Length: 129
Image 1 (tube, rainbow, N blue to C red):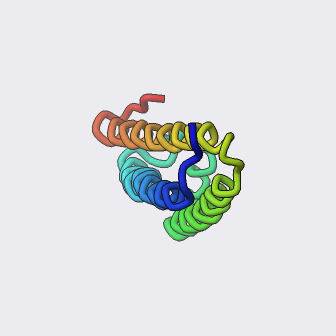
Image 2: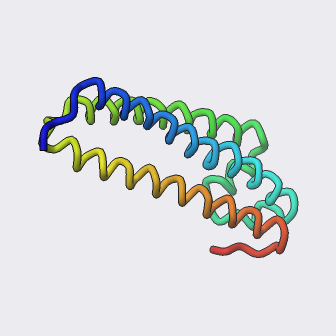
C-alpha cells in the first residue's frame, strides 16, 4: 500500500471538520436545547450529569458559559489532534485515522443517544439512563 499524497490527507483532514460540526451541533445545540426544556419540565433533579445539574441550578448564564468554553476547548484540541495526524508517519497514519473516525462516530452516536434521552424525559418524564 502506498501512502496517500499530501493533498489527499489534507482534504480528508478538512473533511473531519464537517464531522466535528455535526458532533457539536448534536452535543451542544440540540442537547443543550433539549436539556433546558427537560429541566423546565421535570426540574434539575432529572439531570443525570452532576456538572450539568449544578450549572442548571446556577442559571442559564452559567450553562451557556460552560458550553461556550467546552466548544472552544474542543475546537483547539481537535485542531491539535488533526495536526498530530498530519505529522504521523505514513505507515501509522491509516490506523490512526481509522481510530479517529471510529472515535468521532462514537461521539456522534453518544450525542444522538443523549438527545433521545432528553426527548424521552420531556415527553414521558422518565430517563433512559
